[in-house]
Length: 203
Image (tube, rainbow, N blue to C red; front, side, top):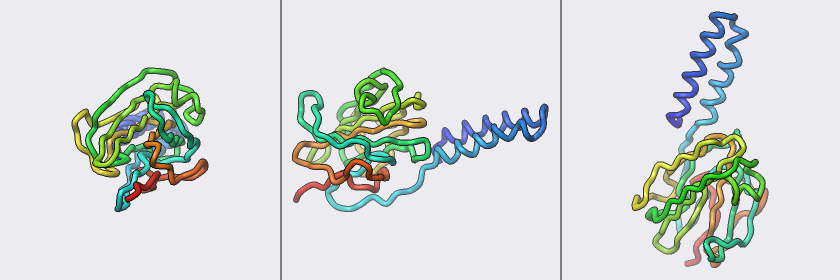
């Protein structure tokens, strides 16, 4: 469980208690229901990280876009993952390596499943330099997501599938792969952070 879940759910439980005290149990029920949902939303299950030279999904959700794209003048494969309210929102490192760059960009809060969200929405871009390749991914805010959390800093080393951050409520994550590493997923696939393989490195 992410700590934020306990904070928010505790506040909602107290609100429900006050509402029930003054208006009866029916008045407290909505706050208690939201408290349970918040605990569910901020769940943080353990994941089995695959072995081998692979790139794993940094997020749970549905693959909504796979295409060739430019990233800072470089050709890449872009894999976009949409996180609904019912997905786990903890983000994980897609490769093992060192955090080389972090770039925050303020922006809009369009529906995260829309392609324009990759460009216009508030986002945090992270670059990890691995042993064999460098991977960039973006945490992108959505219509309801109003806070992006990244718990690492430049220079930190991360393991494959390690927890690195969180996007609160519905959101999107874009992963940029080198052109020589084609994605192993397709639009419509469901993926799990730290477990699902987005691509394999050739030996």
